[in-house]
Length: 144
Image (cartoon, rainbow, N blue to C red):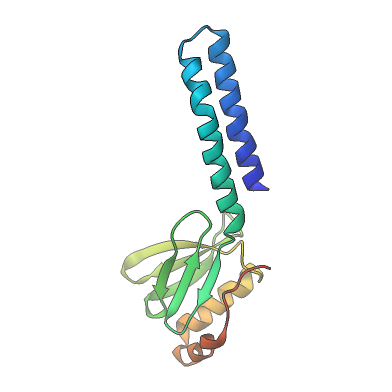
């Protein structure tokens, strides 16, 4: 749904700017008319990319890999995780406090488990190295 809204917003914005400039008699309106299909196509490609990539988490014996929708994946080793907490501003994120006073946010909105359960799993594996061996046979947690 977000992708459709993005595509519509970009297309509507382009059409609105072109129409305003054309009404004002601005010569740049012609250039915008030429560029508009390219910008609309770019928005379409972004929309498809957002829809196709759902994100998720991969829990392995070595660490946690986050697959966000709009950015690169990031792997954090279990030994580097000091604390796992919920994000007070939004349910779709958890906070990881790492060694060296680094804090990162990991999106969990595409995970097929409730946020509290994801926090419990990540906390458990971060604190108990003996339990991590069972992660070798699990799949990435995503919604179907």
